[in-house]
Length: 334
Image (tube, rainbow, N blue to C red; front, side, top):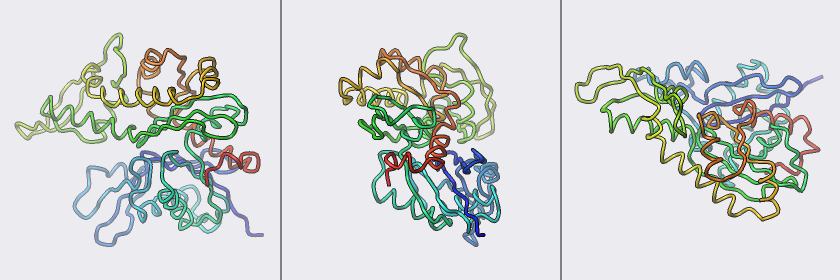
């Protein structure tokens, strides 16, 4: 008997997570591929490629095929999906039956087609798509079938997805292309402009995770980092403070808060009452930014909660939909 394997994928700008039917989450690696410029073929995929990022010579280029939550490089995206599936099991690429992939709720039909095509070229026989906020809602255990409003704010690497969900559908949808990548870029620009220090993407992410915050901290934090002094041109070590980083992130945090407020303004009054009672749920890697829930609570005057294990909420939901495809048929977007 020729067995097939059913897979759920959270194909993210920063990380890709894979869920296998009956096994759960089996892989979580960076969405990056190292390409050999001479052959055009991949040298490394995922974690190995991430270790090469910003450290390669001219023959090797590291590429992140997703930008702002959508596929920017079709061929490299195919390499990524195939390569990560191969890591899970080298013999599976020809034996994939159903594949459920989550996508940002604000993407176009053309962008959806690109995701679908990449999955099919990677070997999937039957590809279905689900919106990220819906997957996150299912993943944290909300009953999305009820006529009760639930608000999800999913902050990923490329986008922030805000949705009010009721009766198997997204009632209100607000999607902005601000996420972890944009926050990292803001940190790089801030230290370049205000401290004459050039830092790399990996250092910016470390700063964000260690000392980044949306509200004042008690006590404020410090971190020692390395970068290149733009005046002398030589490598230097500097100490950065959480106050500095908070200033760097001011614009991105404000954009996320404004998008949440826009979504609330568009929410029908009865569903708004449900959100007042049940609160706003924060998912995605960005939800772990220190004090983001506190800042949104102050801004909206509503309860705001960071869900348990926010990084895996979307893939857990995508996996549950895969396991119970018939029950969740109405929540699929394609």
